[in-house]
Amino acid sequence: MDRKLSDSDLPLLQECAHTLRFLSADMVQRANSGHPGVAMGLAEVGVVLGWHVRLNPSNPHWLNRDRVVFSGGHASALVYALLHLWGFDLDLEDLKSFRQLDSKTPGHLECKHTPGVEITTGPLGQGFANAVGFALATKIAQNLLDTQSINHKVYCLCGDGDLQEGISYESASLAGHLGLDNLIVIYDSNAITIEGETNLAFSENVRDRFKAQNWEVLECDGHNLLEIDRVLTRAQATTKPTIIIAKTTIGKGALGLEGSAKVHGAPLGLEVLARSKEALGLSGDFVIPKQVARALNMQEKGQRLESEWQGYINSQPNLKARIAHLQAKDFSKVQYPSFEVGKMMATRVSNGAILNALSEAYLGFLGGSADLAPSNNTHLKAQQDCLPPHFGRNLHFGIREHAMGAMSNALANYGLFVPFCATFFVFSDYLAPALRLSALMGNQVFYIFTHDSVGVGEDGPTHQPIEHLSHLRALPNFYVFRPMDAHENVRCWQVALSLKKPCAFVLSRQNLAVLEPTPLEAVQRGGYVAHAHPSPQITLVGSGSEVNPCLEAVQILQDEGVGVQVVSVPCLDLLLEQDKAYLKSLFKGKVLVVEAGRGLEWGRFAHALLGMESFGKSAPGACC
Image 1 (cartoon, rainbow, N blue to C red):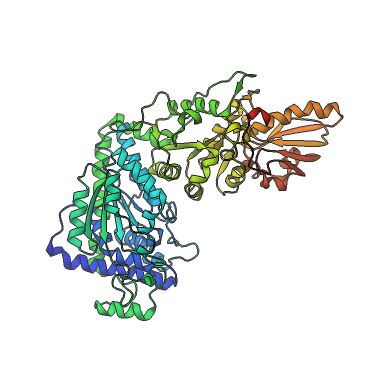
Image 2 (tube, rainbow, N blue to C red; image 1 turned 30 degrees about the horizontal axis):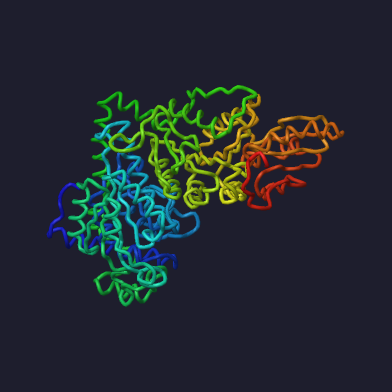
């Protein structure tokens, strides 16, 4: 912001709000699909927000830009209209193609698809937790760089639906605990959801809720431009994360529909739209007055801000080099640990050694567990804890799996980091929506899931993952690695890092024999022959802890005159990408898959499956 708003600015800014409001409504009407209500209700907030944020539309990836997250994906029409008016690479024809096939303006926000969209949101609550992740990323970046090169804010717009989702409570709790004073959330409090007024299911005191979580709470009339400006200015100077409760009317300006659930998720209709415009002296569709376009365009300001920032970076050679190191995300100099053949070691243990090696080679490798670091083996021994005032690379998410996944997505999108997060495999259910968005975005996030099967033993069926491998393997653009031993674990990491996609490592609690190192080329193909036979009658297939029993069965079967080939499949997703000739070389004779899970996905290869039909039992692991 270059100066404070005053009464003299109001006529132009109100015209900007009307333009933004009906530009959004026109988009929904043209598509005959979408959500006009929230877009119309947030028009004044959107206009003033543009006055405050520091962005460079000419370079949407400028490192020190403010991060702006729209948690309610149903506000997408508003977001696209704002991005166009701010000067991003989104023209009027793109707005007219809202929700159409292959357009740059899909129904909900998708990063890496629409310039200026920081992260893919839509499922309610995700964006709120993403914003907390961005704010945490900023603090970590300041710790690694300095507070002059990284001094931006994180803004998030959310609604009643976001605050009803449990993920917002998880992430708000952690934000308050960490004192993320660079985070400003604007809560669009319009008291309407799809079914009607929020008092049908929501009556908590939001102010007290956030006060209890160590947030600063401010309030304003969400249609009063000067009030919005004042509270945003105050929020930028607080010493805590801030939520601004903006009281708004959903569908503001839609005659006969203002404040109604009817305006939430359906076009206004041509008649209502025309009468509403006429009441304000407006006419035509997709009209943007020149004075509005000039007032809201931030290209010149953004270029100036980035140029000033770049001048500072250029004057600091060491700082410039460190930024380049972080942005490169280069793992080529990792000194991977070695392991003694024949030793018994759980893959969660070997994985801990690998994580530490990765963190020593690349400053941007960071992460943590949902309160399970000692069990997941995820502690980075040479790194500081991520707590004020230092914000090191050992993250402590607390028992907040869903927020952990969403925050990791933001850490990955920030531009300087490669994050991992960890919990027991059975609890991957708790972060499934965030994990799915990782796959949708193609984020380089590593999910560490330990205690991978009925080998958990005494903890019993509530903690024994049975269906989870099938679930994760069903995700497109997502790679699930289940190494059979420490050496295969190293190879899996080498392959996973090269993919630059979201990956899961599913690791054993129980000790497994360390075998001779596996060739990298074999793991790159997802599956390979671990024991060959010139003319096998049966092929035994396993992953992770089930490969060793398959190898042990070879001698027993061969003593009975049965030729056996054993195939290890550390990554079924990669195996499915191989050509038919390679697959044919692996699966010879009758194929029996052995896996301590449901294994429904093996039907395309297996003649039979030895898997789990129950949820397991509580007993010592040796009984398995």
